[in-house]
Image (tube, rainbow over all chains, first blue to last red):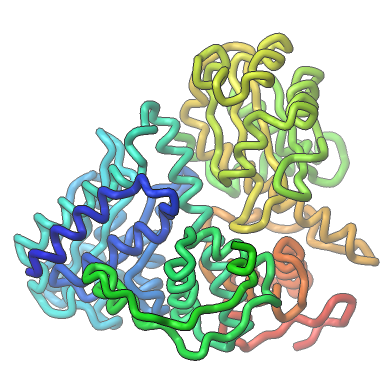
Length: 269
Length: 247
């Protein structure tokens, strides 16, 4: 366990009062740090949607195989049960016989994971979301990982709902809908960028994120601008680093100098 | 929260439409929302820019006043929902928060007879189609039908976008209402990604890209998510505007 990264993560998760706070970027930080700190190889956050199924808000990788694992869980899986019960759920080895969620277990092992953990994000008695951790080997998520995962999810819940404004339950409901729509804006921008620059969806997301950081803008605002002005987007000289590398860079205060996208927006500043 | 489900709600909207013999429209969605949420009235305003700017339908004179007031005053829940892309649940216009947020609107709305206003953004990501509002004459929380209202707002969003798409199409033969339930609730990321891809491929604004995606799926009698997956996988390119469908 990287104690320095752990304490930096708690500080970052609690620091949501900054002007450029972006809910999706924030949840991505939660998933990235979960991977960096815990024995997890991948992580994702799903949020409750009163329409019905929980929806994926952030994942440590936008690789298609990982995204599928959240879609499978609309029918069955530890995340869904975690939502229903409000309790954390651990599966130490998905290949053991007699799995509670056979389809989920099959899809998850096919994607290269053996252990899974679902941690509830609770506001009082309401489950607003869940942090889902995936481990590459059996028992890769130990007791300490579970405890820290729960602490991270708890701090993130408070940060997500910006507690200062959550006086009424309605405000949490309103804010969660805003967060879900932000995710949609980002998916649209990924499509625009992927087509415009001939990159895959994962690379498109990294480009979005690096541009938001360079320009000190909210991820959702950058995404909105790209969707509205696809023709102004030009190709960076090289693609940014992976999210894992970026999360480490950020913690160590050594931002890499990267040529960014040009959207025309910076010209106005 | 309500658990009526998208299909059941869409059935209610279709039945509402059949009762007057017209095509399904946002007015039918409003009528269903009023019934479900025990509201006294509803309205839908369309947006072309950042705020609401055109009243599409109202269910009653008070609803009309509330919709018009917000356009006139330039403030109110429908402005806020378009700015934040999140609903506003103002269960009591008599509380200090409402007076602080919308000083002019709150006064006028209460005078018109509204005690609670619930506003829903008609948005899909970066697409801003408008806002749907509900009001009640007595204060109190919206309650368990929040999810149903979100689903109805999804239906209204798609109806507004399809109508706008038909306005652009010369033949006027869009998906309209004959189509299936607009399953925004079972939304998949591929649909949003495909919409973004189409803004570049077809060189159209994002709202039109989405309408074109839906129109294509409808014309081919395929599920939206399937068509989107093909576009994302680069197995399918939609024909340019006015062109014929290609395999």
